[in-house]
Length: 216
Image (cartoon, rainbow, N blue to C red; front, side, top):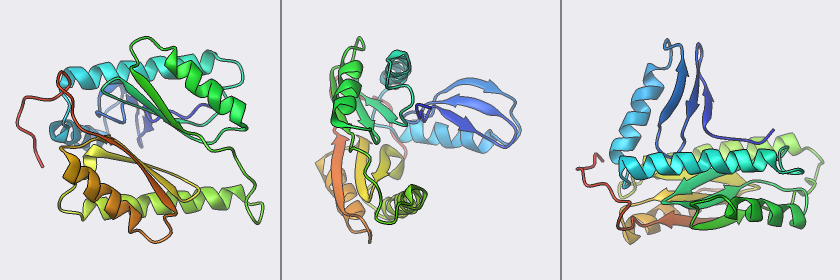
């Protein structure tokens, strides 16, 4: 099943969720989800992007997801789909190089997308043949990277989205400037077990920036 961070399950509700902005698209039930809702509101308040830009990016993510599902040979992939300022970033394993190229091509055909980048390594067998163990290691490493970003005083953690594949960290999002971008990469690279860091953190562009005062 194609992975999509827009879907978040709580203890007693299911909501359609935007990972970049915390935008709630649909909500069934409320008990147990209040905390998640306020977390999303805080992340939006800390964002460098305007509410209109965030909403547009959310829509683009939906359209990319739909395009992937409709494309034969891609619907079974587990991919992280992120869009910032109409620039798309796709992260996940593919079965072969041709499939990776098809993923990028499909995303580029989505109307309104300005550019597409992808970190799409071909799935390789693990040393012991235990792919579940590899995934667990990546989950643990991702948590450590997020913690490192949280304690870095010059980085606003909610602005940085982290993906980890086989020990390779990918940083995504929109930050305040080059110093925050640099400190985020340094913090991630300093975590034990990180093999490499791809820094796709963007700086806010005119026309997409928020004009309200941000909360740190």
